[in-house]
Structures are given as C-alpha cells and as structure tokens.
Image 1: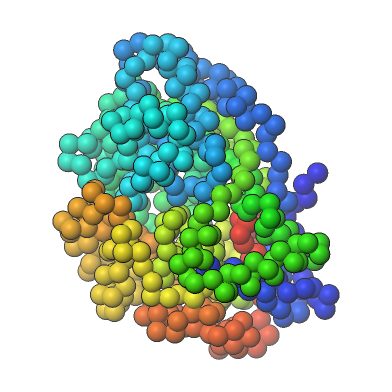
Image 2: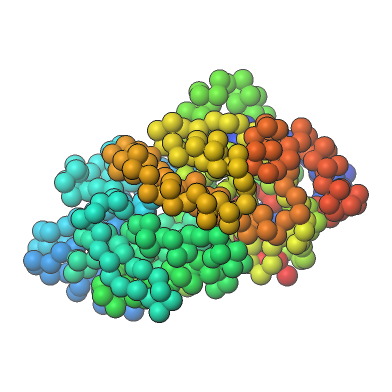
Length: 525
C-alpha cells in the first residue's frame, strides 16, 4: 500500500539529502530542525491501460459515448498536449498514442475520413518529426504525417479563427481547423494541477491575441497559486474562454494522470527517502553524481535528455470538460498532495535539468527562474510554503547558456531587457509588444523550432507572484554576474546562502526543504 506524503524533521541521524542542481546532483546536510517535505510513494499504474481508455471513451462524463458523436462525412480534429508534458518524456508507448489510436479506430469503424491531428503547442516551439512520432507512435505518424498531423501555428493568418469575446472582454481565437470541426477531441496529460480543464483548448490552440488576457503580470499577481485553480486568476480567464468555446464547438476531453515514476529503474533512488536507501541505492546515487560531474557539459545534457520516464497511467476520464476535470485533479492529488503545518521563513529547493520549455534543450537562466519562482514556489494549496517576506534558496548554476535554435528571443531578453530592468510590470509595458510582433521572431517560430518572441516575457511574468511575495532570492552555485543581472544574489554553498538569508529572516529561521522532483503539492495549513 503506497504511503502518503510526509514531512520529516532533520536530526542527527538524517543522512545528506539529495538536491538537484541543473544537470548535476548535490548531497547536502541541512541544519537540525529543517523540515523536509516528500510526496506520497509512487502509485501503482492501472493494470490494463488500453482497457481503461476504452472504458472512458465508452462511458464518458456529461457526454454520450464517443462512438455516438462520430458519423460519416464529419470533420474530426484530435488535438493533444505537446512535449512540455509529461516531464521527463515518457517511454513509448506514450499515453497520448494509446488514446489517439483508440479514437482513430472508432472513427474508422464509423467511416470518418476527414481527420486532422494537431499538437497544441500554442506559442511553444514546433516539435520535430521525431518528437511528434514519439508522442503519437509509428502507425499514426506514418498514416497522417505531414499533411494531416502537424504543429499548431498561432501566427498563420489564415489558420486562426476568432470565435468571440467573453463578458470580461477577452478575445477567444483558436486554431481554425479545430474551431470549424464537428468534433474536437482533446487528449491531455495532467502532470500537475495547473494542467488540463479549460486550460487545454483555449490556451494550447490559441495565439497571442487570446493569451494576453491571462499571460500578463496583473493576472499572475492575482493567481494565488497556479496549482490551485479555484484561486487562480489565470484559470478563471481560461475557464471563461472555455465556456464561450463550448457554446460554439463540441469538445470531447480525454484527461489522463500518471504516477511519480519519473526516473528509470537504475535511478529509482530518486523516488525514495534517503534514510530508506539500500546499499545498492547509495552506490547508484553516488556513482551517478560522480559520472555527471566528470562528463563534458554537452554529453551530460545529451545523456539526461535521452532518459525516458517509466510513467504509469493512474487514471483516464473522458467527456465534457467541466465534468471530467475535478476527477482528474483528485487523481493528481492522490500522487502529489502532502499536508504541511504552517509556513516557513526559508524555503529551499533544487532546480532539475528539465522543465516544460527545455525538453531536448538547455535550461537557460530565465527558464531556471521560471521553474523556481513560477513552478516550485507555487506548488501549494492554501498558503505558500514560505511566508510573506521570507527567503527562497534555489540550487542551479545559472550559466549564461542558451539554445540558439529554440530560444533566440531569450538571448535578447537577457542581454537587452534585463539589462534595463527586472520589474515585470515595466518589462511588460516597455518591451513586450516589440518582441511579440518582431517579424524575425515570428519567422523563426513558424519556420524553425523557436519559441515565440514573447515567450521569455511570459516566463518572467510566471515568476512575478513569487518575486512579489519573497523578501530575497538566493541561488546556490550560480554565476554571480548572471544572478545579479536577474536581480538575485548568488552563494557558493547552502551555508553561505543561509548566512545571507539572515539579513532578511534573522539568525534562527525556520527552514523547509521541498524535496523535488518527484513532484510534491503542499497543502499548507
């Protein structure tokens, strides 16, 4: 029986704790009394994923069975989450492949022959053919690529359709093929509670015009945890858009959840608590640490991104979006939620090598900030783990390193925008429009594999809530010049960082270590 999440107090018997630091690992001794927060044990997967998917399609929530929505001569579009989910990329067969194959089988049995598959990448980079193949599988790829399997293009002037305006004045514009279909099936992987629901179609198939109403500083500051949809202005906006779309388009949502098995079997120690490691686990952990330290940076990065996670399907539910999503969130909570008593003065966490926006790429400093202050800071329900005015200490080298193909606008954002100001609101008002409309960035987004010109702005805004809440942010092992450019401080060791934090929280602060990954969602009481 999997055990629930746990909060452990560090004492004299506690071994060094594993901390992720980009593409390397560290083992840290935390001060006595530090709270270490761990997620529940890895949940078992469903014994027969294909049968579970078939049952969900045949017994949906708030919709007739999928086969009853299909008919000859119809236009069927299947949209699916891009490679930003799950993290790391999962072993084949991907869950989306399993779902898509069953949807296509039902469509073929009915005689549907007008089918398009669209990766819902919004303003993310276009996936390569091999990346698409990995998600949808060989059979689907061979049958539909390239004419009927493609990336969404948010800058195609003929490929978008304006559907309407919400009662809050939000423009709703999505992919034209999806908007003009008789049925849109959306296939989701709900890795965290921020995903899915009405955030799927109105965001994944949108363009800049429809992302601006919720991807802005004002909305981010009013989203008191992106991981708590009921208290998130971001989700409130997406919900209004989704409800408007539902008046014009039949959407059949398929949502899936996975367990916390983010690492291959030889690195299973990642999902265990350090004092429970076997001798074999200890040897594997220290061997991996030494191997990563000795590898050249490019080889280390290549090896880590080549690793595929043995995720297992823990639930699948289908039907009308608002009927499906609450059940999905319950399953995510089963795997990630842990109760924590009270807030802390200092929150410590490590930033791993991969996040949603650097799959097969580089975790540049802006993305590292987004992971720390945008994602891990917000991994809570109720109240933040760290008190208002507290300190967050993060482990990452923050090297000035960017992927030239994937992140061209990030380079200019770092060198030009952050050289002027780090204030999210000023950045938004002074620079966003120029980057969003820049024809070269638009060209690279459409024709190469680059994130949209406005994407680094959104990543910076993602950290706005954390920046506004915290009294100080300190990066352990970071390049001091890079940290300074971003408005943060750098420390060589955890001890140094805690000494620096004493300027803000005093000399005897409470300390909490959020042990992630695997992912943990704190219910702060």
